[in-house]
Image (cartoon, rainbow over all chains, first blue to last red; front, side):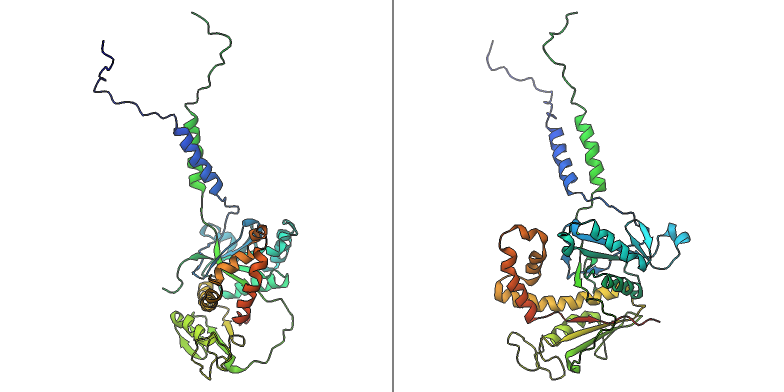
Length: 157
Length: 205
């Protein structure tokens, strides 16, 4: 009886999968923390224009979002084909911006209020007439910090 | 059949744990959008029903007109958007009266006297598309950023865009003295090269 028995050749050793759940969980936690959920369902087209002189927006708690664009294909029959504003989940007119800003401010700490930025997510085909109406409303309610949210890229091809 | 000993607790089968974790993982993978929003930060002027019109020397104004066909007219000359940034830089640091020690301008008598006096006036048509507006904004902000970054790098060894972001970030309050340290620097650069970008209400058709 020899102490060093030769292993039987042929059968490949099984790979241990005991650590597989750990690896998967690690990935899971990464994606869970890195995820930002979309909170409003857009009923409008929203292709942002390109720009490269941009700054990053601060944390979400300091930002409110205003959307504008043409209604999507499937909403076009009910909403029409001209440029519209969307605030949170609802279609809105320029007159609603005032209440929206007040509501957004009320939802924040009074300390955070001065950092509150309006992020304008406007489709690149929207006409400037509507954009300046939005800006005028924001100025009237003293929401002066705005961010023209864009996608990254060079606007001059 | 022999019964198991009472003390030993039954084992939970953990074989399906990996499957459950995979399911969750795939859900988060699909719903994830990584990446922060970026954009051009601007401060709107306060609303005044009857704005006062300050008296400004003609040569200190660079008028940028954008028409409904998205064409640019800069100081009454048709200009391609590719050349707008350089035109704006030349205008701002022109240094007509020779008081600006950090400018590299050509001292053209028809352009601005000093960066403090230079004003860029932007006029849109109501039918201009937002994409063009952003492109023009981008180029003009780019011109200011270029001059500010150059000056800031020379004085403090970091770009102004970087410094301004840290200064305005609410999270910087946590670091003792950081905001107070940056405040005079940011204000100095803003004083040397103020961003005077005025926008007129678009003409309604």
